Each structure stands twice: as C-alpha cells, then as structure tokens.
Length: 289
Image (cartoon, rainbow, N blue to C red; front, side, top):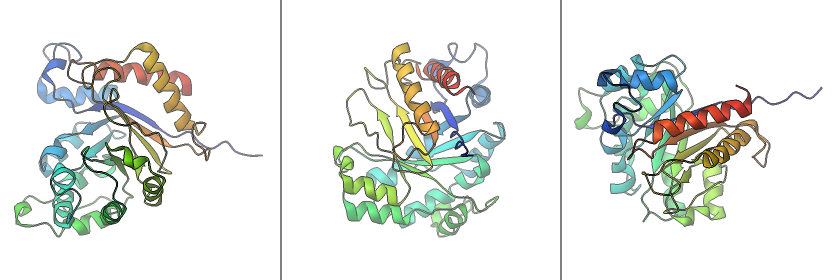
C-alpha cells in the first residue's frame, strides 16, 4: 500500500504588528500596546519580524517576544539591510556575525525562516550570490559559532546560546527579473533557499519557482496598490488554492508537499490582518484543517 505524503504546514500571518492604524480596528479599543503581539499570536501561527531589517535588535527583545507567544508559534526574521542594501552582499562576514549575535538565536524553537530582501538594483551575479549563500550558517550551532566572532559593537549584548542544534532555513526576495534565469534558480535550489513569491501590484517581478525542498515563502504587498490595497475575496480565493496546492504537493513539479509561510505587508490602510484572517480561513477549508 502506497502511503500518502503528509501535507506541509501552512502558516499565515502579518509583517510586523506595531501599527497605529490597527488600533481600534483590528486591535480592540483599550488593548494596551504591550499586549499586541499576544493578540496577534492568538489569531495567527506566525509573524514576520521586520524591525531586524532596519537595525540590530537586542536579545532582551527577542526573549520578551518569545515569552509572549504559544509553544507552536513561529517568527520569521528579516535579515539586516546593512548586509543586503549597504554592503550589497559583499564582505559580509562581520555583519553576519553581528546579525546572528544580536539575539535571534534566543528564539529557540520559535525561530522560523530568515528572509533576505534584495534591493531592485541588485541583479543576479552568480559569483556574488554563490558566495553569500555559502556564507550563511545552515544550523543554529553554526550560527552560534559565527555569532561568537561579533565585533565590539555587540560586546556585552551578544547572545551566543542555543537550545538545540537545529537546521536553519532561508528565503531570498530579489526585485530584479534576472533572478528568473535558470542559473539563478539552480543556485538557489542547490542551497535549498526559497525564492520568495512576492505580490507587488506589478512593481517588481513575481517568481513562482519552488527552489527549496522544505518551504515556500510568500509576501503579499498588495495586488492593486503597493502596501495600500486590500485583497478581494476572489484574489484571496486564488491565493488560497495556490497555497493549498503547494502544501499538499499538487502544485509542485516533484509532487512534494512543502511548508508554506505567507505574510501580508499591505499595512498602510490596515488591510493586512483582515486579509490574513480571510486567507487563513480559506486555506483551512480547502485542506480540511
């Protein structure tokens, strides 16, 4: 008897949670700001940490966030823009050491994929991308060893401990069409790095290639107006069908189920959490979970 492969787990959430526009709308009136993450975690299984893109966070922040969510909650962590936008992926060893020393390892079992978003001007350079992907630690033990090489800026505020030696997963969000080249897809596949499926109202290319055996990472920035427009019921239906097909393997050429992470970033007018709830309900109905 041939066994049916298990369906991948689908995690749908939002990018960030500290938005004034959500207060009194998605967040009920009177909810104190320090409970907003707890409120999110009661409704979604994941959130994308985006403050880590702008600056190195502190271990005490990561520890606090970890304490405010259930055991099965997952944080995706957005990689430092210093690495991607300022250094442009060149000579990044020290910057990566500081990033991994800043506290994300303290999330332990709550640490999910690490997202690297590239600037639009960053075109596919095979040698550069190969070097960058090869420099990323593949396990938390490797990450802790890299973090131990942090510089003096992290002295006294570095986190180098791990709960267990677990695999790390990554996703790459390029904004140049050159990453659709077969050579780019092959390189990402070799490193098991997910190519982000980004909906950007047509501003940047959308990639649908599955380059990781383990995950699909989706960022929903708005279908009609970048960061501003909400998703219609028909658009949510379409995304739900696609996500379900990746989770159960129907939408993959190899038939392999994958875990799916999807984050709404259309937060300018407060649509993100409502759209996330709508998409979550649809996917659950399709997959029967």
